[in-house]
Length: 379
Image (cartoon, rainbow, N blue to C red; front, side, top):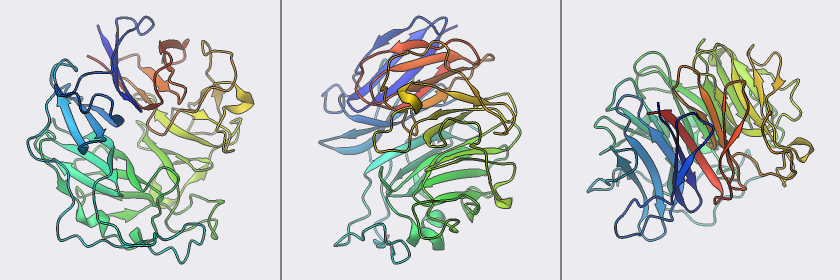
């Protein structure tokens, strides 16, 4: 069997392959475009379609803006749709955000156009043709032809709370998309906007952010506007959330959330990755909430729960003992689809690690540019 780890960085895409998830062969930056214009692009989004094994990337070109490329041969060759696959409707008026209830964020001096800044998330539905894209500014697009074209989801854009969504430190984006068990059941995370769910493929949306606390807004438990870092769904149907603050868990988000950060060395972090087959099990990557964002005690570490956050155990065997390693960003961690799953994460120091669940971590790559996203699969 062969495992693929796709690594998006500040300066392009890198691909690593392994037969045992301990020794890795690395190549990159990968040549997406024969003309060379996108080869050092920022790669914020990667997706590996579980139905077709098609590999997708959201590439930010300094010359041509943001686009989506895809490969049907695991990264050997790439295609870009002839027409821009994602763009905002021409009749969509720019809507300045209302920050009157949030004095901590400044309103832009002048209106801007609704132009695509970047793709933050690429996720897949229950068939090979359904692809979801979360973008900046905060919007959702849905493809029904395998990613060649996308339709703007106006219903999410038009939720009343949209006027309270702010940019956060990383930008205003739909950065997490989590499909449920049923067709049309989707959860999205918005920074800074909260968490929203649909049961009808995006025709209507419900705000399920209530109960997620903030310590940076005037109201501790606002109805919306929370800075959500990442959302993950476990196989029991429950949801883990790493917020700009505590880790939360809920068996049913519409009923509220429980702070489950007790037992962690710090409650702050960016990614959270659910185990693909163990109920109520997830891995988090704590960092200090200070502006330096160093790991607790300046030592790189990961933590795991197997009971919905009621208790946590450190899982750091094999990680380097050196100090001051950078943090894993919100999409900088994932797991593969193997029967015995492997987990992966990269840091802003450019190092990437892999570990079979509960085992020893090993190094996939070192000294890359800042790692922005990581996706992996048994291929």
